[in-house]
Length: 139
Image (spheres, rainbow, N blue to C red):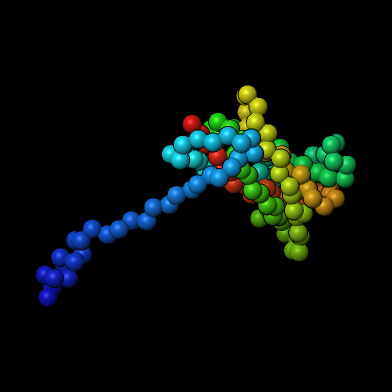
């Protein structure tokens, strides 16, 4: 009986395979499935900082460099905001954002704009970070 249990432990076990499929991208480009990349990070209020948006009066924005992801085309980006961990005030809710992704020849950038009216000084004071995920092609 012990031999049987030991033998069963040596049987190959199936592994789970995760697949990400990109159906469309902002610029309409596509690539092979093996080139799909998921890249994620945090736009920190004390590193990237919020600035008042000129294009959208009453809104604030954060510019986040994602060049390190190595995307070859504009990725699909989702993002949300949350107050930083160092904040001692409770009940702070950072406004939701909408994302504009821009690809230039030299770097990839995410632009996160507040949906509700807010100022850069308010967003920085409340330590609002941007938590983002980008999915796209790297070859």
